[in-house]
Image (cartoon, rainbow, N blue to C red):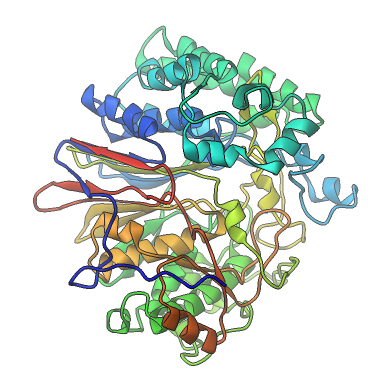
Length: 598
């Protein structure tokens, strides 16, 4: 095994960084690519707000970051604060299960779970796309600019092209992508490759099908008032000609999407799940996402003196990992869409429950596998279901590399001079898992693969229901005022990575760039949310930056250590100083992220 590299620190013990903090007074944005960030910054420079910026960047990211397993046929989750109204809300752009997607439909085909690619059954996991409605809803309610204005950068990048870059070329060098394009020809082979060969960095990528889709949305919105234009574009994508093209494309490969599925879809503004930690209020998505797992973990960790343990010391890593295992056990047992299942979220987030769970952490020995879930119904005002939730049945392995899921997803965060804070985590439409349709210019989400087929489980498949998604982000309040957002792509590692970003900032006083660049770790004991749902009991992934002595001590505690290239990639911390109004953010060097401020 390669000898671990130790992280470099400054005189205060905080990690040195390879990139600067981006400070600003008028506005800032951070995303997974410099052209994505530029698309958002152009809206701020034109007098738009942070909502305009995030929507423009989100559409642009569908052009510049298709290898981030993100497309217009996919989903996104949002957290935001609107300074004018005082709203602090979550927005769910998570797609739902089509009407034909039932437990019986898959069971009758001899399937124990919903399949995706690589393989010939990817079309059985197509999910109703939610991200377009989410962007349009955000722009409609809180934005100031017209839809054609915010779409302009994305259209220009798709029609006129932009240069291939190293991270994208590396991601295209994928056997799964080649396999899916061959199984569902032509896929994207004629768009993303040069006569079957990998493109060279610096050569232009043109996406005519995607440009046509974006241009159609802009055309629909060009006449009439701003709000009327947004609604016309939504009608076209979800019930008009674009909707018909999408459904016909799906049916051409055996997919089960229908026009009625798209017509019924609505992105949802919701009150966030809230908890408190060391004087901060943490806001995130509710139980249709894995987001509350972070808050469960913080409720356990507040009973430990984390700062005295030392950042990323063996004791610190062990304590966090054992708390995360307990939280992830509860995720597997109790999380699901609360519109379709009774979820004891109040019990899960109660301080008494956190205290009881914290007492299960053994400081001298790691749990060899995922522990049993707790009983949050004791602390809930809800009514306990008459039948207990069935357990999660997932395959296990001895060791593995869950980071293979981590190329997917991207993150965007923006703050403006008015004090609006907005962040988005878009994902879905992986080239290696789905089907790419050249006529649309994108692949469809396959995220209904995250449903269970076990009747009675909170996350059991039901038409119209949201799968318990891996996508998360958070907004943090101090003294009643929103001050920070956090986000980090990385599949099942997202909540774990965000936890570390938050503790780096709140407990250890790191600036955004230090918090982002600090080495991360992740437990792999929980079943992977993605097909084929493997888990690796007792496995702990460590990025480079942990000392050899830390490795030895963690192994002595019983952790099965494996080196990981990344434990979440594309992280962003964005904050606004409540006294001065100065904003700050950073960008993750683990991928092609970029931040801009002015």
